[in-house]
Each structure stands twice: as structure tokens, then as C-alpha cells.
Image (cartoon, rainbow, N blue to C red; front, side, top):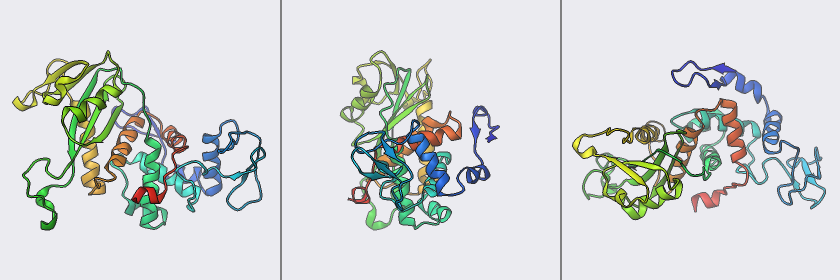
Length: 312
């Protein structure tokens, strides 16, 4: 294992590409890794939950057979990988690339690196993003809350795509986020607007009633049913005692670097999936790389995503 020497994160143990290919030289080793993470106590039927399972069944794609319900299954069954013809080795490599690339990985790069079609790479990436969906529990605080807008500049759009409705957030999508200063964890979500009805429920649903929430002076936050302190960005105030939103703004910065530098565009339809990716990856950053991979593999279970549902 390689050890990073970057300031502030030197305690983490990483995995080099050389080590990665030694870990997953073929589909069989990757499949064994997925199985060990999903079933630490041995295979369990994803249909009836029985542990009376026959392993090594003579079947091309379904090596397990449940003796209770008599159904066949594989390690992919009941996960985001279900019904995928892509081998487990490529799934493991894709999970590594998405987990360790702080600004994300484009489907074009996955297409080249994994030797799959761009369409397959795009679908794989969205399926892996499902692994980062979780409720995360309540943030005890102190909590920073803020909103931002994601989208291209009006001036950069083709004439037919311009809205001609002003400047600033015109044509962009609102995203709200919170960061727990104690744990460093973040949660973020696409919202319909930046009014109180859109922002306040997100914050109250994810913070403990005793938590102190820090925001800017945006009027939508005035109705927060929490201990609440603000900074006045409009007059150049960015820190007022403990009140500031520097932490969540740092997360917005990384999200926007991914937007402009990696993906170049995040459609409004799928934006929440990208936001989930960046939040999930941020929350895994204190872990060693192998633990990040294990966390993603466990998060894949029970979250099947069909292509028809993705594009529908």
C-alpha cells in the first residue's frame, strides 16, 4: 500500500495503480472481493435471505443457488451491477477511479480506461453513484448551511439556448448543502429554489434540534427553527466569531471544479446524482483507499438502477 504525504491527509493509506491491478488481476479475484464485502459470513440468498446456499454451481453467470427458494444468483444480483455484462474486474476499477478522483471521472475517460463503450461507461458511473446514497443520520453541529447555483454561463451558450432573462443564476439550478464542523461530513441536494420553503426543510430534516446553524444573511434562513447565527456577505463580512460558511463553500468549490474541469456539463435531470457523488466522496476522504472501496461495494447492495429508469 502507498502512503500519501500530502499535508493534513498523511494518515491515509492509498493504493497505487500497480497495487490495484495486483489486487484485481481478473474477474475472479474482483468477484471474490465483492462477495467477501457483501457476505462476510458467507453467501446469502438475495431473494429469501436464506444462508442455505450452494456455491460453485455449474452455471455461466449464476454461481450460487439457494436450496430454500431454488433460485440462482450471483454477487451482482440485487446490486447496482445486476444484469450487467461488464465483468467484476472492470466494476472494481471503475469504483476505484470514481472514488479516488476528487473532481470526478468523465464517461469518456472511463470508456478509454476500461475498454467499454462511452454509453456503458456513462451508465456504470451513474450506477456507482447510487452507492453513495444514504441518510447519514442527523448532524449534531455546529452546522454550516449555504446554497449555490450550478450551470453554464449564459454568455457561453448558443444563441438558441439563451434565456435572455438577466444575469447571475439565470438558467442555473439551485443546490442546498450543510456541513457538520465536528465530523466534517456534508449533505447536499438539488432544490427547486432558494426560498424558505425550499431551503429550511432540508436543513431541519438533517440537523439535531440542539444544533447551532451558521448561514449568510439570506432572508430564507430567518425562519430556521434552530439556534442560528449569520455573517453578512453583502457588506464584506465573512467571519463573525464562530459564524462563517467557509467549510460548505469549500465543498461548493470542489463541486464546481468538477463541473467545469471534468464533466463540463451536468444536466438538470441528473444533477442530483452528481451532487450525491461529490458529497459521498467528500465524506469518505478520511478513510484509507481500501476502506473507501469497501464502503462503495457495500453501498451498491439494494440499489439497482435500470437504464430505462435512468433515461426515462
